[in-house]
Image (tube, rainbow, N blue to C red; front, side, top):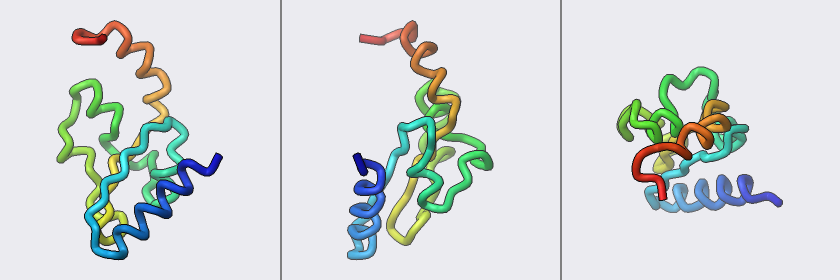
Length: 92
């Protein structure tokens, strides 16, 4: 209860004090992504693309959503990704 809200607020506070922070949204709902003002439907590449090897970190990283706070956004595609990744090579 309140995990996303706590993560966003703690990250924003650390960023405000000058710490470099990276938030990675792994929830297909995308509340963290949206909560930081990023429209997840407008993002071209996201964590799902990174996980399946279709994008690199530099392509998915949303630089400084807030000063010192970067985000790797999510997508609803991540919900179907679990089934896709089960058969992926190197899965353990």
